[in-house]
Length: 216
Image (cartoon, rainbow, N blue to C red; front, side):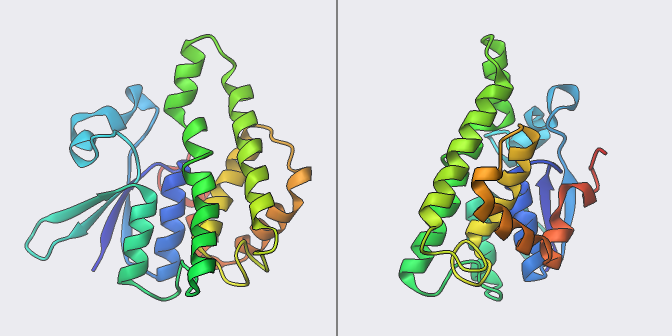
């Protein structure tokens, strides 16, 4: 089975899913959705039919009858991937460690990334605010929380010595941190984990610069 991922090259939510697809070895193709061009293709009728929230990613999965099932929201997609392709697992087997991995992932997914995504930044700019200063502050706060909460749980990666959903969320957020000029010196533990992830082929393949719609 081959799936289609509607995504934008620099979308961190799309990036998480790409890492998951590559880790699992799931056959897939990328269908780019440009979030800026012509006011943002995500607002067009075709994409809003896939996702009424006008966001990426969207995963299209063949339904076996000539149609497709559509799934939105990166965490839901990763959960489905993990249930459908169990190896390698994105969630620790131990219930407490699993909860810790989800906690760290959600600090990024729910508590950090949404506050610095394109729509929020455009709204802040429209109100006369400094969108870069806003983004820098919320990212620094979120990543500091990840590092603090990971203490005692981390090993080679955020939760123990195996990649988990938490690491899939961390890597794109550190990329965004650099774009916004966040000082990463106080976040050295996270940067070290990021460097280990960067050596894994799935993380390399999912990098924005290697995507079909990459703008370099």
